Length: 562
Image 1 (cartoon, one colour):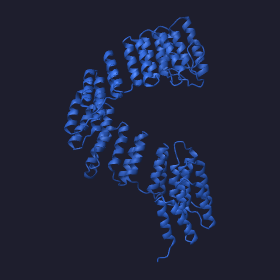
Image 2 (cartoon, helix red, strand yellow):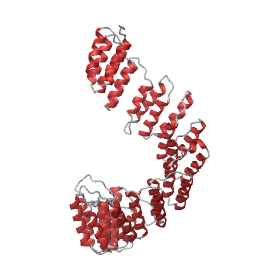
Image 3 (cartoon, helix red, strand yellow):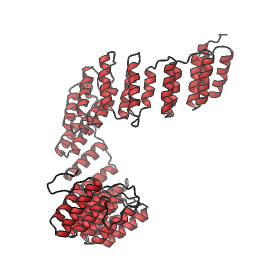
Image 4 (tube, rainbow, N blue to C red):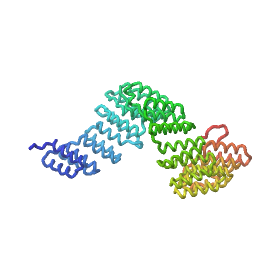
């Protein structure tokens, strides 16, 4: 028969490893050693098998055995070991392995650099990044697109796009830099767009065109999105028009790309542009999907243009596009924003009768918010009962709406009961927004003592984080109730100053949140215009803010603190 060769033996060994038959691979490897057909390729194959199973000790023993047989570890050997260290997130081991590789006289290559780039994260220090970049610059072969794609991916991941720009300039100056593909340009355009660097986005697009790289639909989508997120929806639309002039590129224009432009106009409430873009889509035969229609309905809702919603729903039906829960939720919210709560109720009932979707928390909260704005307490409570009956759990957002409503309706005791009952029944703790609404309700009902007591309840709850807005609302409540000295206590509590009778946080390391600057100005102005007691309180508060917090009390000139 045919005599065995190292090549044949290595192919069989690799097949065993690829199929996961490590026992057979081990037996075959021992046979190779016995008949003297083992070489560096076979050792590297077995090394990979051990490392894939996390057997680092066996892998290291194999490297020693290889050296004993007079076989020199090569780039493949060290890259496999290095990759295992990266997978294990052994940062010290990574750099020790690299030093061992260089000490053995084995120079890193593009694969080595790609492996090291994968080890970088947002937590990597600047020295690690510098070392990896230095290795990339020192490798002998030209940088190919695979390696540069790894560079791009790493720079995006560690949020160092300036480094990416710098590397591109340096590599181009060195020469031999491969032209990038459309997907690679797309990744960079997307990253710079998200970082808000619209100028770099445009530079990359022009560079791509100068190098004759034809964009794919994904690349074009990345470019359009980058322009839109940077407030350049008009420029994105112009780009679409330019691409449509080229018959080949026109094929790249799709529903997603047009919908992105629609979203850009919708966010800025340019409702006329939204419908102009929509009309153009239909005239060019670009299909509209549920996301497209939901985007336009959201634009109608935000622009108080719900009169156009009915036509959009007709268009959806005509084109066989099924509405989803977001469609209905957006319509309900839109009618509530416009104050047409009855129409919102009608849409809600229509959806329920259709039976395809059940209202979710977002939809119920929209209806509740609409009821609150029109002080429709009974309707809101009926919606809450329906919500609970449908096993849709209320949230802190739900509670905030109900507390505002009940506070305006002068039903303060019911607001407090609502917070206690809903949070207990559904297993969540009231957050700072709920407590802030309760404070406002107390002030509306002229119950300042209850508002101040809420502060003490909050700071006793280690799970609830107080913020500067809460203190601002509480301080303003004191001023509305003609209690400026109580407002001073609130400011002192907000800044953890001595000399007040409000509760202090149970945790000594709790964060000092302070109070909104505008509210502090209002407190200072009221004290400044008061009598001797108020002016003395202002003087002491000013001294303590400067001594303990390094803050200068507002002097009425409108300047900021510092």
